Length: 303
Image 1: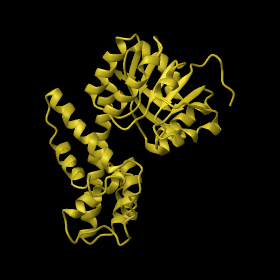
Image 2: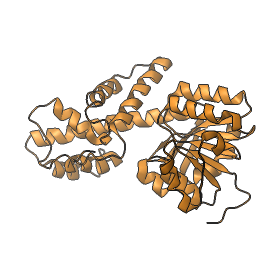
Image 3: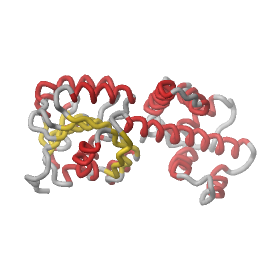
Image 4: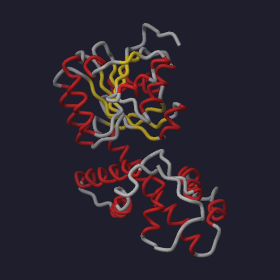
């Protein structure tokens, strides 16, 4: 697609499982995009879509109006942005779409503001499928003026919603992950109970769908559990990190979250065993607590 001169130049830092399709959506929307990834070959896959690939973060951001980061964790985001800082242009806008701590987003906002650079934290939900389809839920924290500037860019990747000042995007993502992690664990418990009690767990899932228990997680991850397909999407290690960050945010806010504490302990029990398995592996954690009880007869599909 030809690039419109009126569109801002974008740099995308982090071309991984999520970053690749997200950057692809921006290129398809006509944006001029420069890509960087620590493993250079991962960024080079975007060359065929019209991206330019840079060797360093500083080289990547030199001419950028908007810089998007999609990296592993808060400390990595800071490391990469600090490496790019000498080349960041005053008045540019950094949008961190990684999943980090609220405090890390607030610290990054202060660091960049001192240099006259805007910042938004805009983590996403929807997984690789949502990234490929451009239907991600995007939870954006930052000033209203920066959000207005970011909306056209973010809209190429999904549905952006402004949820408050810097740091609140990460807080909203943690609320999302709280619901996801808790629901995954409850679906696993329901299927294991059905199997152990003598019912057909697949039939039980079909019977309760369409009622108040219906959810996207019951639809997608319930089937994954029945198939024992734990090849990732979202990963156990990421879900564990998110749950730990939820409890850190809860402590900072002065609230207790007893259910989240239990769910975090469930995921932590397999975080070193199957860290790269899909988050639906909550079922495996539950089965470890119930020796001799198992959903279905299929072999486990694991990364």
